[in-house]
Length: 146
Image (cartoon, helix red, strand yellow):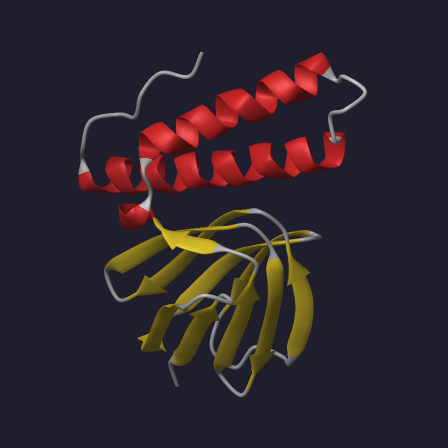
């Protein structure tokens, strides 16, 4: 009995497939793997890389947080934001990473440290999704990180 997976943000349906073999998602307690016949579950997701495996195909999705519900071989993810690896603009993600790191290092009075850290986690998840997809497909490595 394969899984049905739906990933939804406020703006759009990011992913909807039946026949999924497994899902690996960044949970608040660590990576969470979901296979068929998984026990019912509702938990939070933290920013990171989510992987969906269906047969020989693997889809990488950068996710910035949200909730996952597992029930009756159906997985529903309500995400703050989510992007498939092929949708990610690497240059923009790298710039966001540099900007967030700079804000964290400066720590000025006007800097919201929690927000800068969340932006850094989001940028790193996006970059990791692209790099993992490139490695799997044998493409060139991503740009160097300063």
